[in-house]
Image (tube, rainbow, N blue to C red; front, side, top):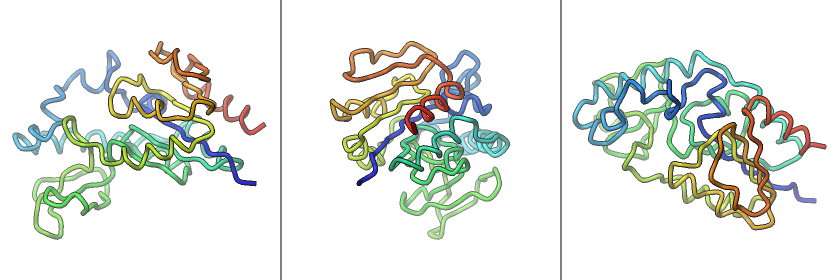
Length: 229
């Protein structure tokens, strides 16, 4: 008998309880930075040193924190289900917890890529990426991040996974940033759908959706336990 398929869509809320600030909270990441100064192609052209420093500090923080109960609980699902995680997060906490199939929509902070050839991607040793660090073609390395105004190339790989899923679980995202916010709309009508987030989210109209207004660390282990039963 073929294993049922689960797709988990995760956002900043799943990593917040590990100590990684979300972008949109009152005390969040953007409070001290303007998006246009650190997270756009124009910012990179204008002041690459500032952009590198911003992501170096984010990377340093990611390497200091650990996966939480929500990350570890999702790994447990792999005992009984075929699980794909599609995350908007740029941290590597899902992988460090042990999840095997993780697709990063917005890139990975622990990697760099060539400014001239987007297919040349490299792991970053430690937390710093500096000016004058170059790819094998001699061009400056940039963070392997999808910036505002750039295409989201992994979307085309994400949509079929959602379409095939028997269960879709959305965790810790306001579903406000497109195109990622639209992924749940590709789910089969009869697929079971769960949305875990302590805030009110605008998706009450989706068929067969159960909304759990709680934090990831509280709600995810309980939901996983229920599904495994």
